[in-house]
Picture 1 (cartoon, rainbow, N blue to C red):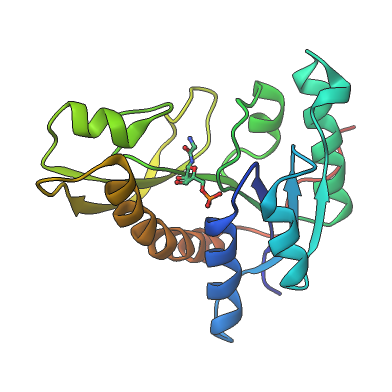
Picture 2: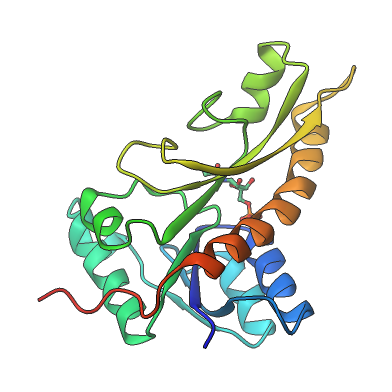
Length: 201
Ligand code: GAR
């Protein structure tokens, strides 16, 4: 039995799409993507996922106001109902509380558009350009409580070229994200024990 994977997105969904494509492209890919969740009802990722034949749902954060853990309990409930084993954050732009991070410890991945520990947080491409970095890239890491801080599973590097803008550099990095993330998910999927977490008691 392959681990069942949920992808959490807030926006465009290109990494989610890359994960789904990779998982479907090879019969021996060691995980299956079965669920896409978003904190935003209008996230383009949801429409893309549905077009790809996936179950895709919004669990909007708004109704929960400032109670972030309550929103996470609602997300977690869906993950448990769908018997999810691994969660991939793919452009999921909310800070997680210790609640969800703890529930999915060792089973939750994130992709970040920089060579961590350089440039955690936002605007990574602009910051890499401003710092005159010669190399930039992306990182897949396990999610822990600190933002963009968990153990690094893998990185992909690109050169920063003369005349690069935020757009050209982010496009070069994104191409690498789409290769790195499926490879790192496969690696984790091969190691993970099944089944994933049960409902909190
Ligand atoms: C990606 O570049 C991803 O690395 C980044 O958001 C983009 C989402 O694009 N994530 C973060 O910045 C998380 N800190 P996508 O929706 O097309 O995958």
